[in-house]
Length: 293
Image (cartoon, rainbow, N blue to C red):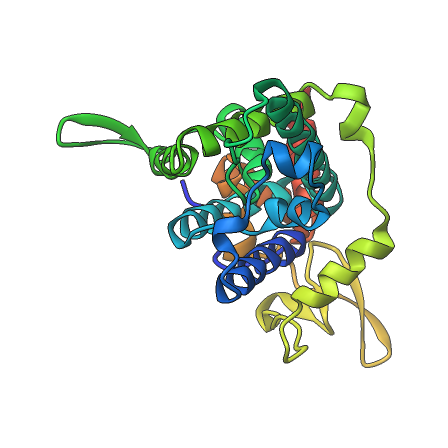
């Protein structure tokens, strides 16, 4: 499978997080502080350094970790498209905060002043592997050198590379992230019902808009007076009501690909988009409701 249409279409929160993570990684690297990143027992229980809590959430300590980490964050934008920016923001905050608390508990248990955990959004990345494993179906299988693989195998390989990049230093935050993702999946404390303030989410949407400010072009073949043509749909043409041509608005290939990347059947995705008038969020709700029946 793929992550859907390229770019951060319908994933403004993921885009903001990826840009912030890349910026902070480069910034600390230019300042020569990369080797000082990562939480340790001393940073938490003796010489408290609050800046390390922030850096451990966003900044990677090495270029290879940044490459694999940002690739996985970019790939997992599919979940924001699937559940919406609001719920995905809650998922991000829950995963980061809980995994950070678990890392602190792990350091308290180890009581080893020499142990320093890997820096970066490991909690969020490995929390996302839980819905990736449970909710994203395999869409293709193939063999390479006699080994059976699926379209999800390369994502797992990238995750393993990141998980064992620094051995114990990276394994601990990785497993803390998986535990956080599992608790979110189990709806611990009713977390999946919580909504994030829309006013804050609108900031992410504005930041992710193209600089040109232009809106996506509409297909004139299926539109009359900027209104999609549906069977029997009355529109105003020249000041007089008129019945649009007996056409069904054909969903855009981008929208269909977005739903297919979530694991939905292509034909079902197309029909849902027709009923939803090419609105991806509405079409997603239609498909999820039909599966729950």
